[in-house]
Image (cartoon, rainbow over all chains, first blue to last red):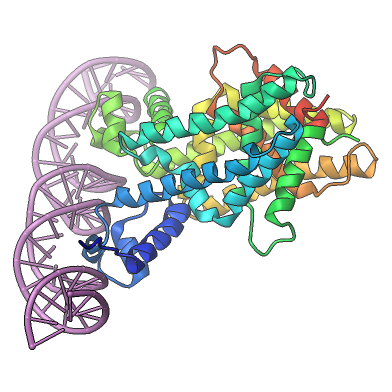
Length: 193
Length: 193
DNA sequence: ATAATTTGCTAACGAACGTTAGTATGTCTA
DNA sequence: TAGACATACTAACGTTCGTTAGCAAATTAT
């Protein structure tokens, strides 16, 4: 029995869609826009995909997978909370910088997912955020961190990390790792001398 | 000569539109959606407004005005760079928390502005961001701050401040001022003990 | 060589979009 | 009391939307 693999054209569609969704937003990107970029008719897209939303789902859940996959670097070793924050920041930023367009779509367009995908997405996000909260709580319990509102702190840290998708350019002076190091350094030690 | 003041209904339209634009995004909100929330027909909206985009413009530029207005608290007194960062954070967060819906639209939907409004908007944003950069540079020059990339730092700080629109709820345990204090404290002193 | 698969087309569907024209009805003001 | 104004309506416009049906050619696998 053969498993059919529509590999090439479908990938191209998803790549171009990612760029367009990032630039114009999901709702403001039409299938005709997407087809034009690919040099085909809009109706032809449906030889490869099921629906417009299917593309968005692929982008969002592939990015979610990447974020979770990268987290393995964080939990692999037993170390201090500071070290874990640093490792998490580096891993997280690495995923974002590896695909800034898809990250932008992931962060900004997920609300256009329909159920049950939307609930699945939010559940994964909660899980991911919970891991950051745990590190912060551990750091407070061990006396390594100041006593703070762990959720507040998680939101603040993640907002800084996530924002990198908005300004990172592959040719820039900072490598993804350096960005992660600097961000975690700011979060841990602050701006003051 | 009479100056006509269409005050009440137009305000209502802008308020409801702000909520919808925040929840669904500008492009995914139809004029019929908006009309339904107001209990009228879509065509009736045009007795009060010129176009859908006019509403977006009003929201975006009113928020911009508010951010600049709040900045006066920051530049009014001669003080240390740390103090200025703290004052700026508090002022900035105060504006956001005063209207979380409009802030969300301001941060997420500005790209749907057409020219020349888009260019005007971006110019204002550059101006605003430049003020943060200047404080950071001053703090480095005086030896108060670590030597860092000022733009990188500005982006990181503002991303944390701006993210508050996503989780702040008026009835919460933290006041807007407390949020500003805690955010600036994290930025200045870090999480480590 | 033949069958299956990939890729794309034209034509069209019903629905939704932002918006305009023209009209009617109250309400406030001169 | 007359005119201006605020508010909302019905009907409709031309356009664009996501998507389907049916067909055709090229490529690939058996």
